[in-house]
Amino acid sequence: MFGFGHMFPEMPVGRTFSTTYRCYSVTMLGDREDVERGGKIIMPPSALDQLTRLNIQYPMLFKLTNKQTKRETHCGVLEFVADEGRIYIPYWMMRNLLLDEGGLVQVENMSLSVATFAKFQPQAPDFLDITNPKAVLENALRNFACLSQGDVVAIKYNDKVYELCVLETKPGKAVSIIECDMNVDFAAPVGYQEPERQGRPQEGSSQVDGQAMETEDDEDDSFRPFIGQGNRLDGKKKGTESNPQAQAGAQQRRGIPNYNHKRGTITFIRTSRPVANGNTEEDGDKAFEAFSGMGQSLRRKNRK
Image (cartoon, rainbow, N blue to C red; front, side, top):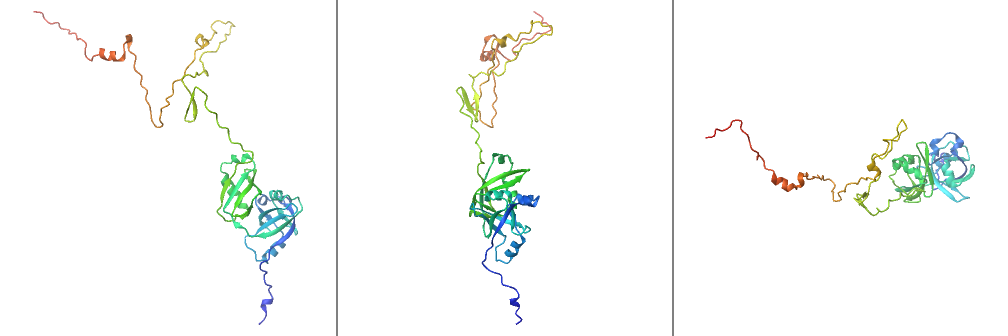
């Protein structure tokens, strides 16, 4: 009766947000590491006013498009404090879009599917030096809102920046990673080379437990004792010659390895004791009789 319905305009339904802005890197705002190491942008307050009047889906996700190079990426929004007509984005995002400072970029709100899988490729082999790469990546992606195939994202760990290319995302080419359970996989880093395998063992050697072992015929010439030559304080050469056996080329030979050894078992090696006078062990055992000696008595028996 009083017509209160005409005091508040109806909210438009089905409209999308699409505006062109001048794009600048976050460094123009000063020290904003929280923006540089993530995947979110800073927009002007007028954008927030327009978005609140539209029936959009939260969280707010946007597609950035460079129409000149036909490059696009996706991002979230962190704050609405930029100057009117400008947006501030991370530097790695400007590189993906091939944008210069002050370039024009079109911003559209998007609705993306929740991510279930993503595959990354490090752009340098030094990424393998990280002890737990998945844990580092999971912690870094908390500052991101979405991922796009083909983007090269930058993460910072231990004061070092690592770049990773997004090779694959499921269920779409662009996905939302906010509060999701996503499986992560890594491809071989760019420039990574597999370590060379050791060649086949040479003749005269055997392969035991994956390592080459020398046989009896191989000679160990790595060490020979007492082959050096001494020097005297008086300058004479007498008594300074090296060991004649070493000079003659005396060589040490290694023992024969037990190739039939089984892991978890202990083998006791028993050797027979040599018997004097050239007798064999069997002859020595027969010649010995316990308590076979003759006794002597101190008292002599009387002879009758």
